[in-house]
Length: 393
Image 1 (cartoon, rainbow, N blue to C red):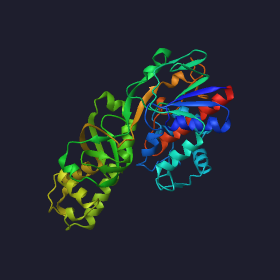
Image 2 (cartoon, rainbow, N blue to C red; image 1 turned 60 degrees about the vertical axis):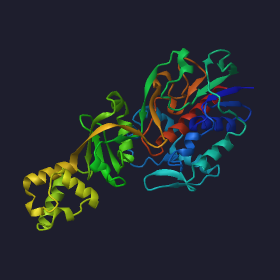
Image 3 (cartoon, one colour; image 1 turned 90 degrees about the vertical axis):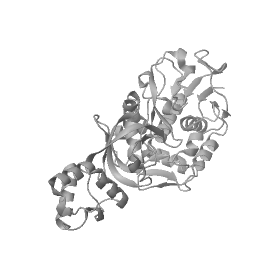
Image 4 (cartoon, rainbow, N blue to C red; image 1 turned 180 degrees about the vertical axis):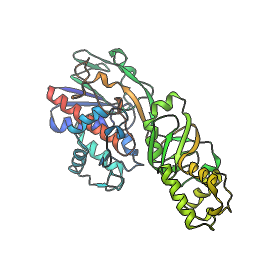
């Protein structure tokens, strides 16, 4: 009997196993999982609701969604797209719903529906929990923890501490660094506004890294989709700089000239009105930004003058905040780096140097912004590995 070993019972590993078993029920598939549960990360993703993919609407270039790995993902999505993902899960009894932010979730809003669906599809696999892989060897043709297998698929996910069981294979590795994290900002006046959300543009001063979207003020600094996107784009830069730098926030997510024009029009319409009572943003945030611009609470629009207009425009279009570190985004930790894509045949995801060895999911140097894109990479690459193995048999 043909034996397949899958190292890692996460999204990519279980999806690979499910497709192998559904299309070739006679296969022997063994999943090695170091943790105590299969699909543990899937169960908590999306705040426990499981944002399993994205419609990709509004994504002009895959690099916007996949800062690392966009070329290989272009091929992977042709093999197994977001539409294929939706059809796969709905065809197995999990109705899905598309949100306004282009994210797909189970109608139940319960990630366990996705977990249970995958485990049902993996019925027949030997899932070995609490079983870390100590070593693999290219021998007869493969040995995993001393057992013989015809092919091996590595789907261990992000590995911040590395993958020592691959050390003897001579693979090129990209040093892993965190992605998808929030920013610590030592500004008590700002963090006193915790809970406020505003549509904003943010960037790292002195770099090309920019992002936009909902920005959440927290008791430690900034979070929300805009922050998570920026952390993904700038993951390696921030790691190299000790998570220090200066964050610039455009509170209107608009060009400086447009903000200046809006302020000028507001001043001309309300010359005798106090600026503090003209809430162009949420009232608490507006008061904070006026103070940051050095403007009195009782100043009227007619008294603003050109210097005051310049200061207020500058604060609204490019407020500066020093970064003092990062915080994890709940438990949805994503790692940039891993097995370099130069090792991999992009069509099959088979290792160029070692036939019969495949890689799928976050263990590869592929990672994405938040919004279901990382799980889509797991589904697509897991599917490709299954098809490649089936073709090779």
